[in-house]
Length: 248
Image (cartoon, rainbow, N blue to C red; front, side, top):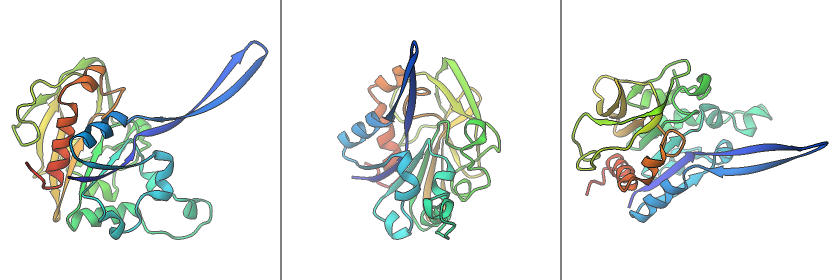
C-alpha cells in the first residue's frame, strides 16, 4: 500500500443567473479527482486529498508531517497556495516556505509527482509560477516562465518512448485534449511523448524520486475516452508504486 497526499484538483465555481428583471448567485465546490482517488483506492492505495481552497492552511508544514506519506502529488494547484497562508498574507507573520520544505523532503528520500493543469508547472498565463522555484529543482523537467499550455481539441495520442515498469503492456493510450510543454533535464528519462514533446518524465533528486506528467488526471485534457480507459487506474497506480519504490 502506497500512502499518497494529493493536493489540488478542485475548484469553487460562482454562477449568476439572470431571469428577466431578477438575478441570483450560487456557488459550488467541484472535485476533479474523484475517479482518480476511487481507482487508486480500489488498487490498494491510501489517498488523502486536500482540496485547493484548503491547501494554504492544511498542506504539511514540516518534514515530520510529510513523512506520513510515501508520495505527494501536486495537481492543478499553483505555488501561491503553498506560499501564501493567512499568517503571511493577512497578518504579515513569518512561516516556513513549504516549497523548500517539500524540496528537502524529496532530497531526503520522499517522492513528488506533478500532474498537468491550468495551475501546474507554469500554467495559464504563467499563474502557477513554479519556474525558478524549489519545486522546479526537484522535478525532472525545466519549466517555462510563460503560459506553457498547448490545447489540442482535435485529440492527440500519447506514444510510449521507453518500455518500463510504468508503461509495459498497457496497450495504446487514449487521446488527450491538451498538455504542457516542459523540457526534460539531463539524466531524466522520457517514458512517453505527445507529438514532439515529452509527456511522462521520471528522475531522481537526492535520495528521492520525482515524476512529471504533463497533462491532466481529469477532464478537460483527460478526454472522456481516457477517463473510461480500462487501464486508467492501473497506469496511475504504477506511477505511485514507482515513486514509492513499491514495485510489484
